[in-house]
Amino acid sequence: MPSEPMQHRPDDQALALRAQKGCIDSFEELLRRHQVPLLHFLKRFANETEAEDILQETFIRAYRNLDRYHPRWRFSTWLFTIARRLAANSRKRQIPEENNTTEIESLPSGSLDPEATLEAEENKHKLWDIAADVLTPDQHTALWLYYVEDMPVKEIASVLGRYVPATKMMLHRARQKLMPALQSTELKHE
Amino acid sequence: MSESKNQNNPIERLKREALNQRPEFSESLHDRISAAIRENSPDAKHDAPQPLDIPKRSPALRHRFLASAAAACLIVAAVGLIWWNNTPEPPIALPADSPNPLTTLADAAGKTTLDAGLAAEDALAANRWGHLDKDAQTAANMVLHSLPFDMLAQKQSSP
Image (tube, rainbow over all chains, first blue to last red; front, side, top):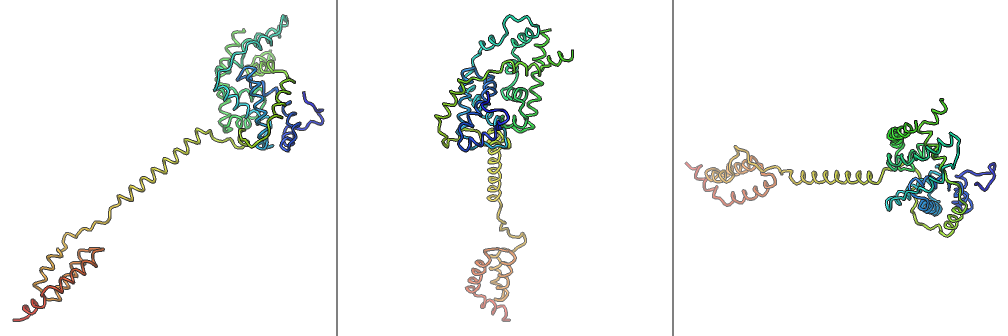
């Protein structure tokens, strides 16, 4: 995916600073690096088509407002902040459609491997869909950014527009709410 | 056993599910977004979030705080205004034992000129007619000068 060799690969902040000075190629490199994690995140809030549209709008806005980015923060955090707000606005306008085709395609076909079968069974239960049902959107986002994107709490707080202690409490409560629901799906397997 | 138990940990399951569902990189999507970015000129529109800083309060909380502060200021101003308007002026109350100045002047008719003048002064001083002192004094002097005290004084002094 990256267009440059690893040993010569500048970090996101360096690319963002170059992009601020007018280097559009640097910004496209940032687009290349962050397309997948952002799209993956946006698919939690919208179907595939809408997620791609929101992703495009995210990068357009980020490019047009590059002067607002400060390199002391991770560039991905800034992108997630924009993406989250756009996704929230989109949700207010419409309810995202259930996209079941992706689920079906992700299931391995005809595998006799017990581990693969267990994995397929788990995928059926869509743990993150359970999380979306049980948690508030902000709790869901916080949990996703923490466990899937390995984002520090401080940056999650920035994405959500909250204080760090409130974000820590939100993560704690999200886990407390979600664990019983997830453990009940685990019991169904046994 | 411990490994399978770890794998069945809800958090690990969440992570695994997310990893399994991660989309592939799409070159076509990349090209599409790149083209859209190049078409959009970087103008001065500010529709991106504020520069990342200390997380700000939510707008709702900020509005509540401003509304409360405004209400508090209004209440303080209203209380101050009411207090200022209702502060009673010191009543111009005559002491209970002060003599009626008119009666005093009338009594002065039976006294000598000096006594009458002194009586008038004492009456005014005793009644403490603040800002009216000067006016009352002027009026008293006019009355005194017009009354025939000299005649009365002569009458009293004559055997």
